[in-house]
Amino acid sequence: MKNWFLWLIIGVISLLGGLFALANPLAASLTAVVLTGWIFMVVGVLTFMSAFGDRGWGGRIFALLLGVLLVIMGSNLVGEPLRGMISLTYFVAVMFVLTGIFRLLLGLGSVIAQFRWAMVISGAISIVLGVMIFSNIPQSATVVLGVFLAIELILNGVSLIVLALSRKTEAVG
Image (cartoon, rainbow, N blue to C red; front, side, top):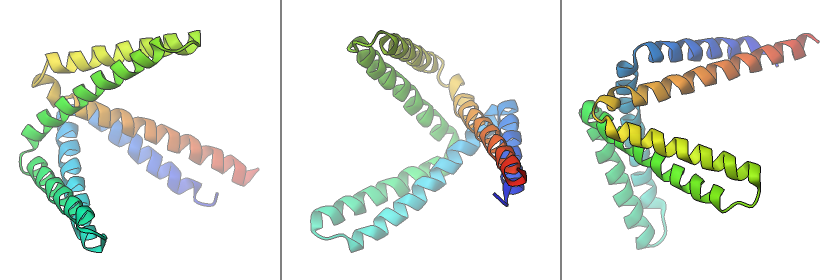
């Protein structure tokens, strides 16, 4: 891999961005909300535009409505990031609880003992995290999204650095 150094630079930038986000989770949470809002708007516009290429009125109407809904959601997140931060935090908490319940049920129904305990423990932890987020809203909204963004950036940075360094040794060896 000739461009291992580029991957190394990207990994270091991601790692540093994650550490910065971890040091300032409120700013990272606001950034995550605004970024999500812009992504919703772009996807909404593209979905709206794709409606004109769909066949049949059912698909067109669905694409038009979905596109409009995404643009409205995105503009609300960008226009009111603090409210959006609370809404997205509620969504994250709900997803934690739902995935926790799913994992718990999946684990309880498993006949493989190691899988059963891993899923039950994982499900219980997800439910506890979801309940912790719910019990502390709106305060948790100021940090949850930022901490998640920080963790993702740090893990992404570390994996890219490891990839780059492994490609460097392959290129040299």
